[in-house]
Length: 78
Image (cartoon, rainbow, N blue to C red):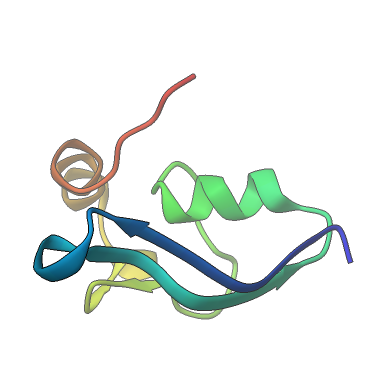
């Protein structure tokens, strides 16, 4: 396995103000992580299958919808 995350937790704040950004996340990835990041970011297209983010099927979005998605929902730091 190239990348493994097991039971990852991240909390911001304490007490009633606590926000859990990660709460028991498990993830395993083989090599090809940059391809996955490009797919999630709407920079590349799947050959088959679906990529659903926040209830929206990004894999079937047209160029205009992907541009709006990248502007409003995804941020990149290069």
